[in-house]
Length: 280
Image (tube, rainbow, N blue to C red; front, side, top):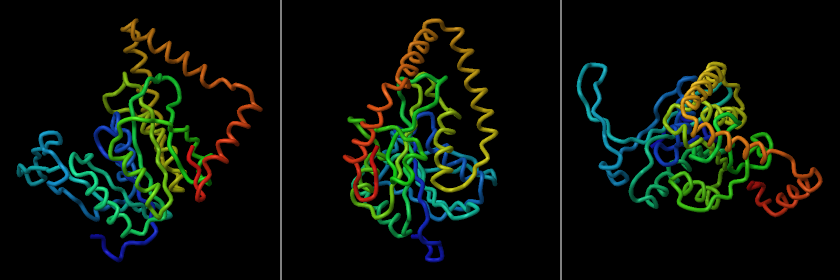
């Protein structure tokens, strides 16, 4: 599927549209990389076995030549040429059907690239205020854990394909695994959400060892926050609700005793250490 001329040992970054991608923040981060650096498509997959077209519908589009064409749901693998390395970008709609077969196919495809690291991105709706730093949770190798400032992820419940893939690569993969989820305030669900995307990109540049030009996005974040603030001024009930979320968020960031905190963190480190990785 992938040319043998492609470099081995790349970092593979993946995100999927839909349930795993609140406000399009995860796939937006991949799109940012693809637009910021020279990027070309390596392969694509639109197999009917994995999609229910009543749930993930094809689109009618007009091509550059003016022809009307049907664009089927497609998962795309691209190579993105960063200054120091090539990074493989995989994105597309979350499959609807045959997830076990899809995971097996994707695992075979990814292993053929002989990756040094797999990065899974996700975004989830939470009860969080838009005016505070967006929490990013997940897992990473010990060498990256403190640099990424990932919060513990103790979620239990229904999962999407990103959760399934994270479990698969954590227990059966041969490459190092990074899984990062940004928390998106549920009342800001409609995309775009530059603040959520920025939270992922700031950490991605650490993982990829590249300096991204994020100045424009930070300006977009400032405008976005101001826009949400303006909307809240017109809705006192929602403003009161957000003020309560802010109070809760601020209370959770207050240290509960330095000694106890360090002891608890060290105890968790000893408990979670395994195979060179630390699960937060």
